[in-house]
Image 1 (cartoon, rainbow, N blue to C red):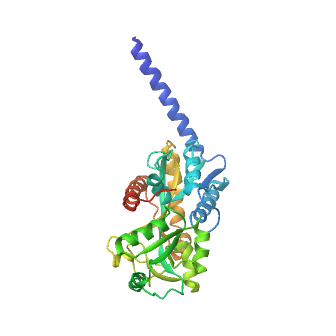
Image 2 (image 1 turned 90 degrees about the vertical axis):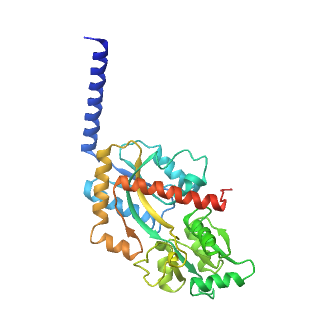
Length: 325
């Protein structure tokens, strides 16, 4: 028989061996603790809270410990890169937010691409941002806010979680679409930004609903509108910015990722477990009550969504000329 035949046979044998090994690994998964990286500081009900919730359910179902590992820094890039460089075996996962799509444009020299170096297991949930003011600001509607800005020398100021965050880009988009004059004041994270707003250091902000809702309900902040194209079940009395400025649609979201080349069988197992958790009669109403819209779509749908968001944020950033200093 020819040398070509034997080479082909050997290659086929190796391929079958690899497939068998991959199948065995997937069948035994998980056989040791799982780590979920969150590229932000611990605390709150955002990415960390969702990671803890999913981790607890995965732990209960699989009988393996799940550790939430907070790795903040560089707008979420440090934790995300750590996940990208981890072994693609399902034992290191990542729960990240819209920042991972924003950063594709904001950091031109980013050493990874969310679209190719990570697998989106599922889009966990979306959560609107809320346009809020300190109660001392004499504006109870967006129309009144725009009028106040127009007659105020140098306009109003707005605080954000930092340059390039969704809370910043939402303010930029509001400026672009509503022509409300706003001076950006960036803070180093959601906590200091909220402290500044509650203390009256800034006029307005656009925090994520998961962080802003408790203060709106307590009366410490005044909600004016939400940034999604539909009203929030948690704040149904607030109009959408889209109803005033058609096309305004910018929100935060949470996606569970695995490193690229993670075996599909493992991705499928994780996807099934997360979707089951999100549809749980106790979990879904809780998240909805906190302002989050549960999604739980397929990996293919999640990947298409990520591509769309990367393009959307790129347009906003380039049009405004936003750069990281």
